[in-house]
Length: 464
Image (cartoon, rainbow, N blue to C red; front, side, top):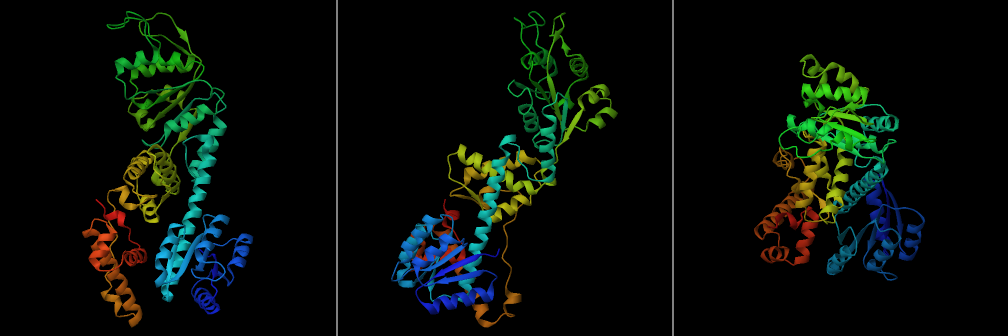
């Protein structure tokens, strides 16, 4: 991501140095300003992705400048530059909303790494906002989520089909959202103010299903102590949704065919024919054409149902929807569990998008719900998801390449690796307690915090 950077420092030499480093090593546009007041004017007049400011300035210190910047635009990333002696103030600045701080004198690599981290973070924030905007646009189809061409085509067909009275057959693997499509069709139809009654043709035993569908009269069978209204009567002038219709018995297929053709049915035990005004939507994960060949599904019923057909693709065929769905479920379960989780880390998103999800959208929803339950801060991370078959990334062995590097670069790389391993070991031994880890290391807690920030390590992952 190419961005705009505003650098504020009352020392002209520091402004020149930072501008030269960033322009030589990146494609970012760099603007410098020695006066904090004028910097605020510039910031309010044109957008910047990153603001780098010194902490100690005569006209306005970095903390006041940070607070003023955040009032203009709360989501901008601000990096504080400070001498080591004022590191406690810099830590305070991060609590007030600074993205990071850098101690002077700093290495060239440190400032470049920090800027790139900020730009990656900004790109993620922009993408997340775009996802939220996309979710807001989908309110017309309730929980139906998808930006892929396949889902966009389905949304368009729902708009075309919903106002009609046509019978609809929805096919697709389990967990792809067949009932959600049925509900969207019903809600956008002329019958949307009436009931949509759902019956699962698999969940109810055959001898009970007929009575559930058509009702029964008193004395129709043992235990029929009174007349009972069936779901067909309950759905009168609304929509009847027959889920998993491929599991319907041949006997009930015959009776259902009459209902579709004539709008007529008889309650169990009754000799009186009744009328029903219904819109029919059916769904199945079966290959009904194979069932026709096997003679387990009636051909005339199939053609009566298959007037308008929706085929829902499995999630693995529309991976671009995984991110959108993940944020939808994150918002849903964070709200239900009263947690302030708003983001998904980049590595967690990559892992989610690499999954096949044989259980489709339903499986993804379960993964996100589980992640929300185990998440300890405001970002859903890899450790929260417990994804099966995902190995933890291994660090490459540097022995084969380290001797190819110049001494200083090799030393910096090995030093960074030592810092990372040392900090991890201390946090592991002290179960994530930063104060005890710093004490064991014999260094100040603030310096240990800086090591954690530089190595990208968080204490939460080590707490019991």
